[in-house]
Amino acid sequence: MPMPGPVELIIILVIALLILGPGKLPDVGSALGKSIREFRKASSDLSDSVKVDTSPIPNPPAAQTAGETTAAPTEPASRTN
Image (cartoon, rainbow, N blue to C red; front, side, top):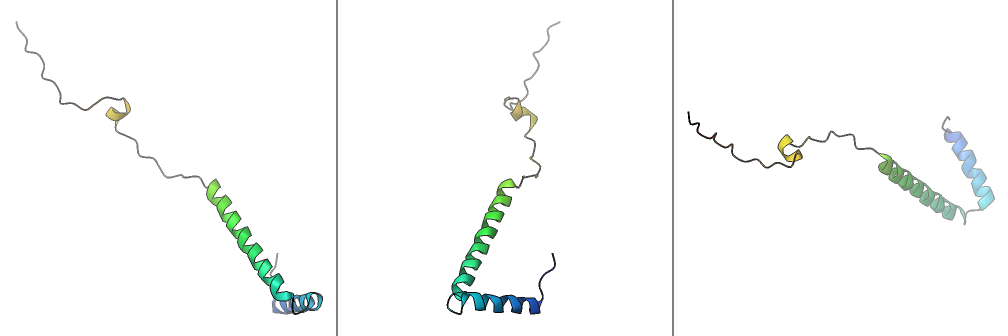
């Protein structure tokens, strides 16, 4: 959708001034600004809640995943021949 140029914006503002009057125009402008801010906030909140974390998760060491403790290796029993 093409953006309106400066001539179109002036025409829109003149029509709004004629319809609403000079007393109501600032109130309508502030209400429009508040609505745009709320819409942006809601859309950013929605996009943040939908965003999926795709960062890789580091793998834990194998000994900790099996529930084993890391102990010093034991010496083999001496053999008797």
